[in-house]
Image 1: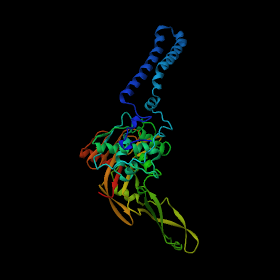
Image 2: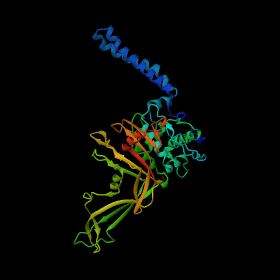
Image 3: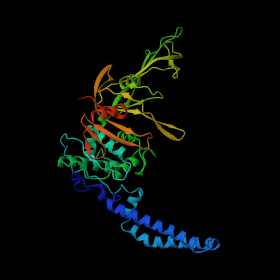
Image 4: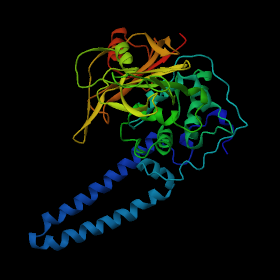
Amino acid sequence: MIQNISSATPLESKPYGSDPYNKKVLLIAQVAIRILLIFAAGLLPLLLFPLVLNVVIVPIVVIGTTFLSMFLYLPHFKEPKAKVESFLGVVKPTALASYEWDYSVQSPIPPDAPPRGIHRGMTMNCWLNTLLQMVRRDERIWNWLRNPTEDRPLLKLVPLGIFVRSYDEAIMKGDPNVSMSTRLVRRALASSGPLNEISHSSERQEDLTAGLETILNHPNCPPECLVKRLEITEYSVPEGLPPISGGSTRVKEVNDHGLIRLSLGSSNEGKHLSQMILNYFKESDLSKSGKVELEGIDGQTHLYPIQERRFEYSQTPEKIWIQIHRFKKKGGRIFKNNSPVSVENEIQIPVQGGYKTYYLDSFAVHRGGSLNKGHYNAHIGPYFCDDDAPVIQPDPEQRQKDLEESYLLLYSHQQ
């Protein structure tokens, strides 16, 4: 069991945690020296013996030197094995099994405070740092991660819960940065999400929204994160057909996380976020839907064309997440659409036959030409920019530019 979990023990002290930076450098140097020794030993016979003898001597010398190097090198891997496996990125199925949550310990809710920096070391975890900063702005998720209950445990996301408490403790202590690694958090998300959606390797950039959806789709994610969305379809009655039994309107109710996915398409022209949202909640091109078999008042089944289909929420979501899908796979490669989008600070979302106003809270931007490369950072509230560590105040012009190229946005119903 994790004792005194409110003290937020850094993950580095746990099995399969990160090594101190200087030990990593030392281990890299040891590996490099031994590789160079093997290479030099293989070249030496070329200078001392004729070409014919080298056919026999070179393989013997290389193999012999390799075994000698392994004999000298392997002891470094034995003490302790977990450190080397962590350094090499070896993933064990039981790596997270030793983490259990002590439900008797409750972490206090920290006061409202500026975001804290998150070090990512020598990893490609800026996407994860950005995700964590964004999730912190959604109190529904953050409060659950901080204090899960026995009937709603974190399961494989325990390392994420430990991180949340470490983050909150840094706020209450006044520390500018969170002193823990995100490596185990990445592995927890990779183990909880769909297969191959998130890699265990810290050397690969990831899709920011893949991590968000992994959290939202967790079986114990708080029920307040789910809202009811209505799919309302209107059918027209062609001349010569009887009216539709039960009326021409059909309503289908589905659960929704308040995550809206918007596509830029192939156009490079600037677009307005409000118009993209309007198009999302109302289908304009119904040519592919064709006709649907419905029962007429005559008791017979007929084909009725779809006239209109729209969507709205039957209850008001606290938060709205918006993903502007900028990446597209083509020929085995992933390309990015950098088209600017005019993002409004206020947007309208259809709710219960009308509209509710939502206000921009935070957003994330990706810099680079490919999903697996580049760099993520987040603008938290109107005054802070998280670029791993430290957190800084953004230049207004740069913030506006980043907003036009935003990738993930969070809107709140309350300003």
